[in-house]
Length: 208
Figure 1 (tube, one colour):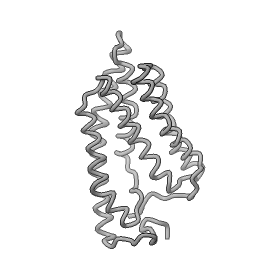
Figure 2 (tube, helix red, strand yellow):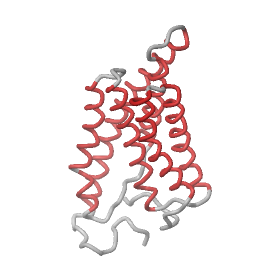
Figure 3 (cartoon, one colour):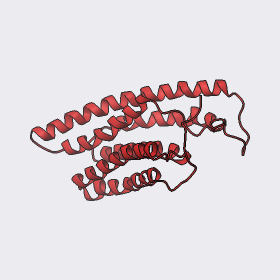
Figure 4 (cartoon, one colour):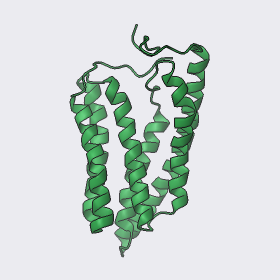
């Protein structure tokens, strides 16, 4: 088993720039949501973030710009976006704090168990599987819908709320399910590569 394939070690690629834009949108979203309570503009920022998440993956594969940095940056941006959105919506009493804790706990488990052991063996990432992508997709599109449905009246506001919460519940379940699969993948890597790589040594996940 190896890490995701990559095409370049460059930092300034179009997919990486899109990931940086997505990261830059996080404080803008929180400012619009919490300081200005400009919910429609906040939804627009989330929509742009979701679009860049899809676009950077497509361009990375099509233009052969998959990079080592992108393998780390893209999922990091997704997790920070989800966490920031959850915290912002919880502070506005739109989602319960237990949902924040539930999703954050998955990343805490990953960060304190499998990832340190993988990095000591030279791996920066694991192969992305469908459940992880589906979970991220569901969560990234759940919260804009919840935000649109909050405080609104009429059929469309109610539909946005229902669909948003359905995506949030399914997304949370898939997020934990994918986390368990990643833990299993990581355990298999550790079993196959029991020896840790010294600092500055060759990465176990690098191309041979």
